[in-house]
Length: 46
Image (tube, rainbow, N blue to C red; front, side):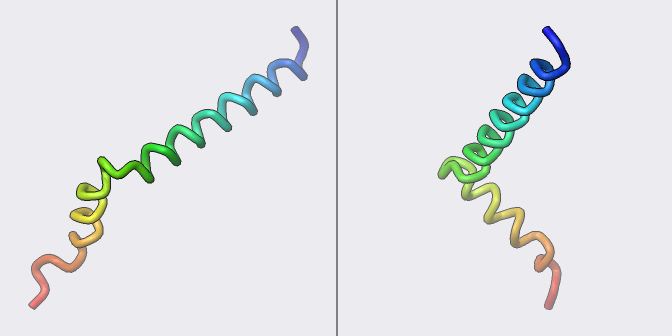
């Protein structure tokens, strides 16, 4: 195993992590939590 193999493994693991975070962020289960978080800056204003 040389440095090229390690770079390939690092690239693939970063890509898989990116796809996992993307799926998590766009899942319908989290929509309510994200909607509530989006409204936080406006709470308390009159």
